[in-house]
Image (tube, rainbow, N blue to C red; front, side):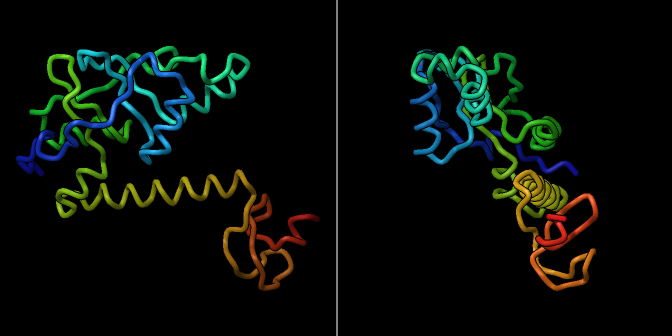
Length: 184
């Protein structure tokens, strides 16, 4: 369905950005202070030069920790090949590109002019994209389950598939089991 809405109608103007010479520690602090998941990296002329996310910083901590976060610049580890979109593109085009990415920098003549996210689109006109809203809910639930599985945390309460007792249940190779059956 063509909506007639273009990216510039929905995008966040003047998004928070970071300079390529910022060290990772400072970048991590800014991510936490601003409660964002990533920053577009722009030079002094507002040219988009990269993109850095929380995952990039975690990667650097694990892979380059001996160097120290204060010595690593965001420009050294950020993605260089960035998928962007024009402000005149349609929301449908943005959604097509967002099948792979949750957020897109909006550029015009190489300069960052905004950011657009799936949530921006949903907040603007949720009735246009009920399938996107459902997909976001499914993705969020899937990510929660993956985190719980990795942590081997309690999923919910119910009947253990091994002993039949009502208890807190955990996912195991044998199905949903209580703590005592999980330890066996």
